[in-house]
Length: 494
Image (tube, rainbow, N blue to C red; front, side, top):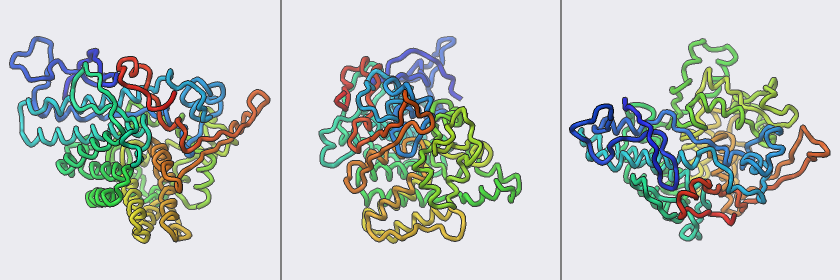
C-alpha cells in the first residue's frame, strides 16, 4: 500500500492535486532520508493508478436536464447565486463566472495529473517491464476518460463543421507543475482522446487485479462512446461489439423485484450489492467520498422530473421506476409532495443492487451499439438490442418497444428515450442533450413550470425555457482556474 504525503502543489489549468504527492518523481534514490517516502518500484506506481474514491461532483450541470428536478426551497432565492438556482431556472443573465463548481474541474485535472505521474515516471522505476506497459496503458485510458469529461463539460459539443475552430480545453500530457498550457480546439481534444484509446485499450487486461483498475471491456466501451459522440458510427459499432464480447452481463430486474417482494431467499440480497454488480465496467462516484457520498448525493440530486415520471408511468411495468423510486411516503425534507416529481429510493441500492451513476456499465454499451446500428441503417438489429435490454428491465409478457419504429429517425428517438430511462444520473443525460442538440431532428427545447407547490404572490409560477443552443450547456471554467492560468479563456461570451 502506498503511503501518501500531502504537499502543496500547483496543477495544470489550476487544478489542485490533493490526492497524492510524491517526494521523488524523476527517479528512485538509493538512500532515502529518514522520514521521507519514495515511490521507486513499478508495483507502487501501478497501485497509484487506483483511486477507489474517484468522484465527480455534478452540481455545475445537474439541473440542465429534462430528467432532473429539485426541491423548491433549494431553488427559490438562488436563481442568480448558485449553479442549482441558475440552471434550474435556465437563467442566462446570471453571472456564472464567479461561482465555484464544487471542485469538478479541479478533480478532473487532478486525476489527469495522477495519470501523468505514472506515465512519465514508471519506466524509470524498478520492476517488471510488462507491468510498466500495463501501468502506462491503464493510466492513458483514465487520462482519456478525464479529457472526455472535460471537453463535454467546458466546451461546445463536437460538430464536424466547426470542431476545428471551437475552443476546447487544455490537453495535459506531462507531469509539469509549473506549466500554463493553452487550450486546444474541440477537434484536437477528440483526436488526442481517440489516439490515446486506440493505442492503449488493446493492452488492457480482461481481468485486472481489482475492479478499480480499468479492464478491457471498459476501455472498448469508452472508445465506443467517444466514437459515438464523434459521429464515427461504424467505429462505435465495432468498439461496442468488442466490449460486449468481453462483458455482456445484464441483471434481470425481475429477480430484484421478486426478492423485494419476499419471493427469493434472503441471501439473494448480497448478490449484486457493493462491488458485485456484473454490469459495472468501472466504479466512479457522484461526489467525493465513494459510495457513502453518492448515497447522500441522491437525496439532493436524486429527484426526477414530472415529465420523466410520466414517461415511466406510460408503461406501467417499467421496473426502473417501480424498484428505485418512492411511489408514496417520500421523505419531505428532501422532496416536495404534490410536485409530480419523484425521489430516488436509495435503500434498495444499499441492500440489494449497486446502481452505477458515473463511469460506464453494460446497458450503456448495448444502447451505444443500438444507436450506431440505427445510424448505419440497421434498424432491425438496433431494435433487437433495445428489446434485449428492456426484457431485463420491464415485467410482464410484453416488454418490446411498441409500436415498432418504422424509420431511422423513429428508431434513434426510441433509443434516446431508453437512454433517458436507463442512464438517469451522472453525466449521461446532460451529455446526450448537448450532443443531440447539434442535430435539428433530435434537438430538445426544455420547458419547466416552477414553482408547483409553493406558488405565491412573491413567487408566482413561471415557465422557464432552455433553448438547444443555450450557452448554459457550456460550463464556464472556474474563476480560480482562470486566475492561475491566463491562457484559460472562456468558451462562452460571458
